[in-house]
Length: 203
Image 1 (cartoon, helix red, strand yellow):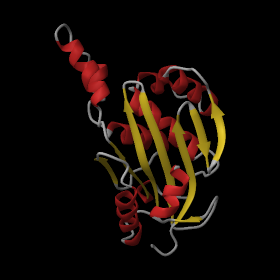
Image 2: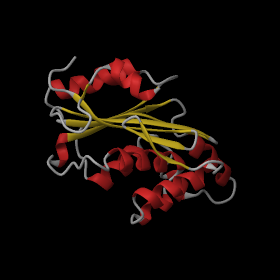
Image 3: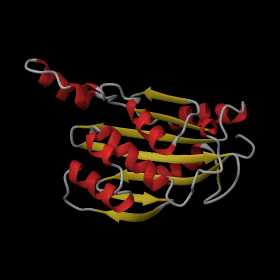
């Protein structure tokens, strides 16, 4: 385990429900994914017009970070001090398929922009002015041990002082986000940053 590495905030979004730091903070039963994400935007942000142009994967990750950072401002860090490390299993396949459907007539540049999964990192970074190390991994499952090890290495080498990390998956109507803010300095929840602790918050 890294010395002085803490989970200071956590956000999990699944089944039309949001938990932050283990407590339910929002639920919108029976809403389709686009409407559910719009409800999150209206509740937790509401003044970011570019949100409406994003694909569903980017909206999900973006909204999760809005909630994640709601009580943990990042203005004490220089832009290059905060990294973003994410993973999922479907890459950007949902948007890829919708883009392909437009190619036979007039290809949609608005969709083409989102045919790489790491674009969600770009949207998050633009919003919060993060300029630190970032990476997006595609795996069969949320490999918590791998992500935790990767982020620990970034912290230990001094590449970053804080990192938003976790899982952002969306394909058709299926979705799940599980994001964690990890910092060298204790604040907020200040739980030890271990794979086991991440797993407990993910359940």
